[in-house]
Image (cartoon, rainbow, N blue to C red; front, side, top):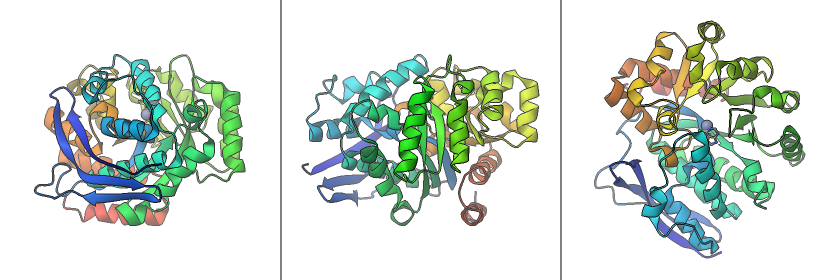
Length: 375
Ligand code: ES4
Ligand code: ZN
């Protein structure tokens, strides 16, 4: 494996084509990676005192920025079906969840070695730290790598090796969640879960993601029972594109502790009442919902109505490299576009911390940091 040096850019506005310099250069060598801070003339992104939050809905593969995709392709001798960055960026116009998933899975081809998974994870954490993230629960899609001939050890160890030092390196405590692809069979998921347990993979829980409609929670009843039996936390995407009944079934059949997205609960007042009563956390991803056309515009996003209903909502970035923003960008746009108040931002930051699977001690520490942050 050769060394690699690249400067990342991310674009918080794909439409305007604006790009901002990544604050770090990353040099990777056979024996690891090194992040070097660029000359900080101006902090180019992230607020000076970003709101301290927990990020609870994040797909690590969705943090692969176009620059990193090209850098990894070059390092691994992989030919991409795009001539250049601009051509790749031109594909980021999605019509629904599936149109995004097609590109998301295709771009994973550049992830070949443990080092690739480690570099991707390190790049996310460096950016997340600027966004105010102090605790992150990170989903990994093992089946999307196994189906490409990449071993479980390669993807899990690559990500986990960086997460193990994330608190020290970035000030971010982290947990790893193995997410299962709901468009594959339950037997496939069960087999992978058994392998993860057999290798004593450092996972805190399981999730359920990928194409929602037509793949209801009931399909994975045995998987979630096995995870519960193994002492793992359980979450599932529900009510992103799927109907409110998927949220009900995720709670009743899968016994999940959080719902990822859940925005379509608003179509069922009885369900809303239950979610409020039971304080069920909903990890909402506003920019994702706009990009995947779950809502037409940010102005029409149900988040303000969800807050008004008393739901336990928090703000997350989902697949930030694809949806035009990290968690700070989500907050910034909610403020500027729909006039979300500072009070509601702080309330959701507190929700995110309380809804996490961090230790009670860590939660108390983060809530104290939030209280002292001046927000
Ligand atoms: C996802 Cl936004 C979203 N929904 C469902 N599955 C996913 N995997 C990655 N991002
Ligand atoms: Zn998601």
